[in-house]
Length: 302
Length: 98
Image 1 (tube, helix red, strand yellow):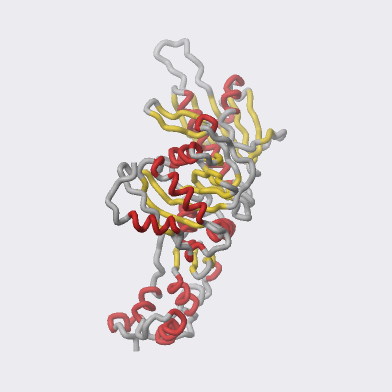
Image 2 (tube, rainbow over the protein chains, first blue to last red):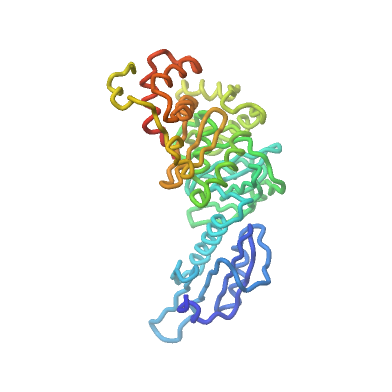
């Protein structure tokens, strides 16, 4: 760590998010403005210069010596996370690590699960899944259908099992790379209040796949959420009861899916059919019957 | 006597699950309606037990014989007599998932 300390830091910022204090120091004060845009939702400035997690971002200045290139360097504590000539790449890595560090070390009243989340009529649809599973596409399609945006990255559960807004800009992948978009680009808005979960949807995009939602038992739904929980191993005695509250008040389904547009109406109908007081595995809704019947029809939903 | 002879050798004597062996400190057991999710803190493995497996898990107390477990299953879930195979499938290793 002493080696990193000696690199010469001239500016920095300190903040707290979800109970964790984080510092970011740099050798170039101008880069801090960009760093601010990478911070997670609900961060608040921190007066203290002593933090629990410290990132160090060294900006590689242009060199006067021919053939010599100064790399941008990013450290977390003493560990080097990135060495690149491309500042966009370094900022992406910083943003990812900030998010994961906070998700892992968040205080007990917040449990972070990799998931897309939208709100619909006072209840949330949670779509657990890793990167590249198609969360953002499905979330943006749901927003276009009138849902409220909560997150395309993380479901943040409180101790009551309600999901809180974590409104980072949607990270839409395009041919030219990632593009950040706010929900109003899809005609929607951000949710403000915590919501009880109505529907857990375990799904992944597969080209040409048919949408055939099968109900999951609450225990299986909990397993799917736990599989995507950032701090699953850190303290299961805390995370399991929170996830239990989530699955006991919601219904869960699993299916591969094709294009998001072909799934949205079905998801909203499934959510509408959920009555919070019903035992999830006792349900036999019209939508489930339709889903069952659709297995017999050999067609692809576009 | 257990109906399925191929499993009799492993089903003689009372059945013990980790909770009966005093290993409860290493487990987080979450009850969700009639199912269980069991988290093994030592190995960081999670198991999901359906309703039948959950009942068998609870009866694996080191006192109850497999035949008695089978009888209780018949009584509680209507599983036909001779459900030794069900007991044997659930007993040694709960279905692992995730």
